[in-house]
Length: 342
Image 1 (cartoon, rainbow, N blue to C red):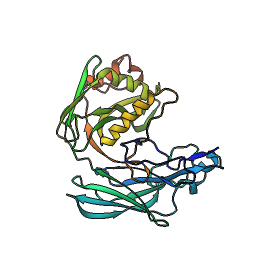
Image 2: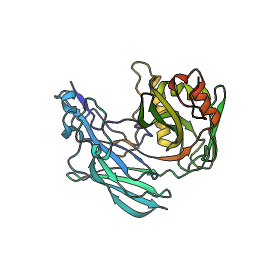
Image 3: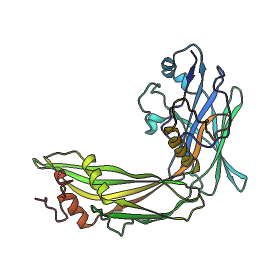
Image 4: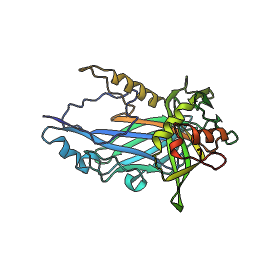
């Protein structure tokens, strides 16, 4: 039985526009697997590069435990920065172990260590386009791709001057402008709270919970400056808090403030989402074509951007509702006057 050797372990954002045809049934043909999301709002960028090929003799689980089957021993990886079709800079990426960078690989059938990534701390320019060029030194095989970089954008609501008020039966309205080269938008709200214990006056713990409010809101195009908005239902907030924070009769809590992080993905990530939805509707025997924007390999190179509105506070009405509504009363949050709800 032939076994398909998948060398790169992927979390998400893998299938994009078709650009390269290849035959995965050809035994022992080296296939390079590439995944990268360039983010000019981050302090470092990483590219995941692995390999896949057919092995007609070896069990897939045995192969997956061998790091030599997952990674190339040596690669030359660069980003070429272009503006107006002119090469401005060539950035060489450093080979690193993802675990030491804080990117721990999920447990599974694949070898846990090493977790090889290619890294650069070079600040990316939102006005540039970047070509990824990967070269295998032993045979000079080159794998390439290209992506624009998503621009900064404006968030109108929330802001640090406005006190958010989630109430049951009503909605809180958020609004922003779309980013140049951005297509798909998500929002995560991080709620900070302090926990105390009734039986130990010295106990104090700073904690938070993250609420994924939406993840697939799309703009009409990628030109930027489009006015966008979403309603967040207040009922969803109280349901989230009930499920996210454990009941502890010995604990009482104070809600502090929140960070609102908007995430933006490029057009190819939008296409990935579309393909994923289409695949979920397939019947047995149906197969979609393989989509990739990696030339001479498979995978994805695209971009993303994160923008955080930090320190957003809450209205007294919302704090009192969190403390006293039947949905969340058991969590023992203090009211705005620093007392427990009877």
